[in-house]
Image 1 (cartoon, one colour):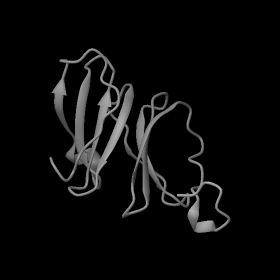
Image 2 (cartoon, rainbow, N blue to C red):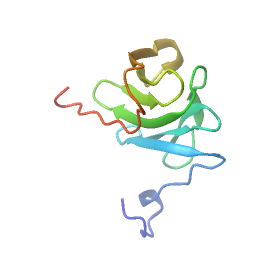
Image 3 (spheres, rainbow, N blue to C red):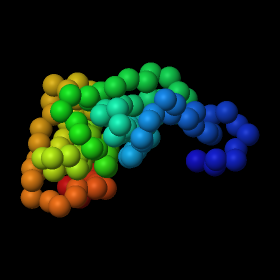
Length: 120
């Protein structure tokens, strides 16, 4: 993506009204940017053009420090440096209904996370 491009479809509309954004990742196939705001205690998404913004997870989040999109399996992974120190996963669609904690409490400060969909 050329940030200096003059062509409208080659730049991203800013994600507005975030208080303390900490992490983001993109699903290039769907055009969604996934983001975390640690002050608002949420994970949300919006299209690159600024449309279709929504909060996909709010309940039970404390201090999300990293998000990663698994574009092959349609999952979202995130780290939470809150009291429980977790790494969790949910489906990109219906995230609040499919959320699972993978690891809890065995980390000092879970921060960034990366997935490698091709190699598991």
